[in-house]
Length: 119
Image 1 (tube, helix red, strand yellow):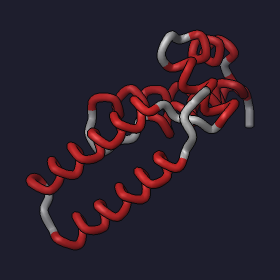
Image 2: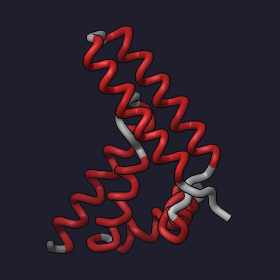
Image 3: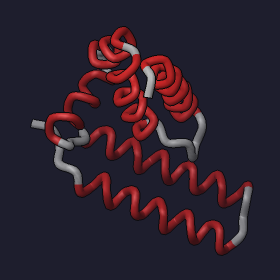
Image 4: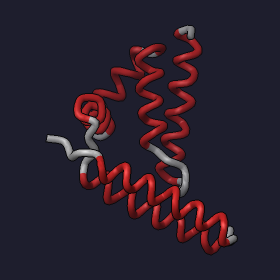
């Protein structure tokens, strides 16, 4: 992969992460992790900015070094997943779709809960 392609993908995933902050149902953290990975390969400037950021940097460093997620991030993820599911329940409906989403969201929360908290 060229540095240019990695840089374009890093900024693309950063845009998705930012959109995910305000749009229920679109995850933020996975896109942020992809941003960091592609930035390391394509954009030193973006990579340095991410790790120096007062909020994002700590999350990335905790994940990279310990595979850890803070308790506040877990609580926020739970609340946003619950909010997303509730909004979709009233907007989309469909028992099979909502059941599938409930199972997916439970799996996501189980994964998040299984991660240690940072030291």
